[in-house]
Structures are given as structure tokens and as C-alpha cells.
Image (cartoon, rainbow, N blue to C red; front, side, top):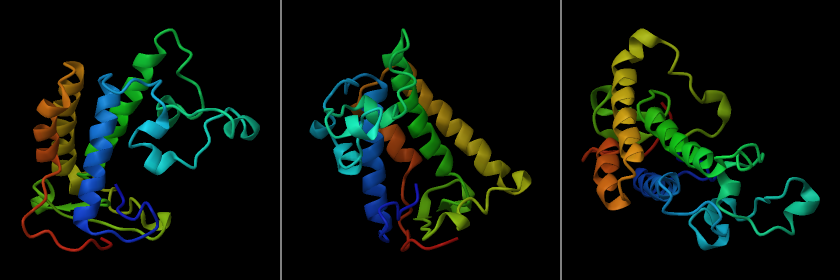
Length: 187
């Protein structure tokens, strides 16, 4: 969610576009439209994980052809389970649920009235500042409740394996940018 994840400051528009690309591709993994054994180089994920090895150790990392499963199960704990593919799909869904919840966090995003359209994505130059606005439950209750509702709507899309074309409008509404969105900053 932090718009400087690549070490550079990004505009709200750039952050939104990257966020929606991540969500689209991760959603497709979560519902099985992108099989977990797909070669990573053939997917969007290679943009962020192309330089990350996928072997169990550094010696193997340079020789193995990485797959989408390696994005979501880097420690190789879940893929070998009897229902490993489903476990990986759940992890992908959880990745999106986490993003939805962070989008209602006062540490990550400024929303109109705390729960409305997104005004800006906050940027951090270091982890020390991260999550400093999340502590007070009473201060954030309205946002927490909105995050729960949005997450439940999203999980319903996953449960029913709605194709991306049908899920996209719902997810776009969760991350809708305010018409007066400003340049990203720190909270």
C-alpha cells in the first residue's frame, strides 16, 4: 500500500494504477484463472519478483524456473499440502484482503471522512513511521467497520469465483479516488 515501495516517490495515480494491477493479477490467482504453476516470467508478477530467486536455498535459486506459486509461498510451506493449490489461492486472497484493510488505515491512506473516496496514499521513506496512526481503536472504529464491510464484499467475490470483469467494478469502488485527490505525502 505504501506508494514508495520501489524506493521512489509516486503520484497517487501511479500508486492507484499499480495497486489495481496487483489486485487484478492476484485476484486471478485467487480464483484460479492464473494457475499457480504458471511460469512467473509470463506474468505481471515478474515485474516485482523477477530478481527474486525461487529455490529452497541460494544454490537452487539460480537454476529453478520460478512460478507464480513462488510469489505466494516463498518458504514452501503450503504447496505440498494435500490441497496446496487451494491454500495458495487463499494466500493470494489474503493479500488482497490485507490491501483493502490497509486502505482504511489512517497510517496508509487519507479518505474523505475516514471511510469515503481516497484523497491520498501516504508515502514513507522508512518503516519507522509506518502504522503510527493505527493505535487508537476509538479513533479508528468507523474506518475499521468500513474495512470489515469492504473485506466481506471482496471475500464473497472470491467465494463465488466471480470473473475479473464482474469483480473489477466492486474493487474499483473500494479504491475509488476522490476527484480532489492530491499529491501523496506523509500523514
